[in-house]
Image (cartoon, rainbow, N blue to C red; front, top):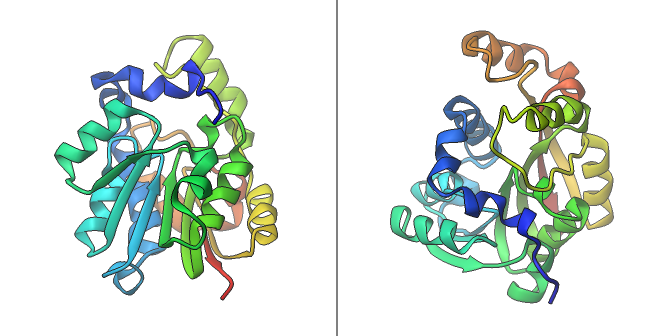
Length: 231
């Protein structure tokens, strides 16, 4: 078992400040894409679903409300305590890089992870682990920041404009697609979020851009991918 670094526990250390630092608009948009769009009721109702890097449990709650039998996983003990109290689903303290070892292969009908893999030392290994615990025919719903935006995010961190000081290893549509294909998961849909920073209070325009400028998704802030594991 590897040693979890202090930087990986950044969100757990933030405590109440974690929720205060989140953008409600950004969270809701990711919920709308990763759950509402990618995982309609027939893909969730009665299914075994795993959230990897569950954070404050927003996605676990949404999937549970849609009828899924949810397991929320995270490396943060404090975060899982909050989810247990607020959502009431099964919670397990698990390293995203050791999912197969912990749960076993071909375990879940659905695996969802939003803004988690970039906070691990090896984001693509985290993706491979998610693919490993997914059942054949199962669905993987994933989001992570786009590497093209890393310089701006890094600058904001150095200027102390954001409270996060953990690992931030961003990805691209291409690297995710290649990793998933090698893991036996076919990408069914790609969707980009936020053509400009969501901190700009033009959310109606931002949502309109999301809907009309998907050909520019490689330039958008969030990389959202839906995959299905081969049967």
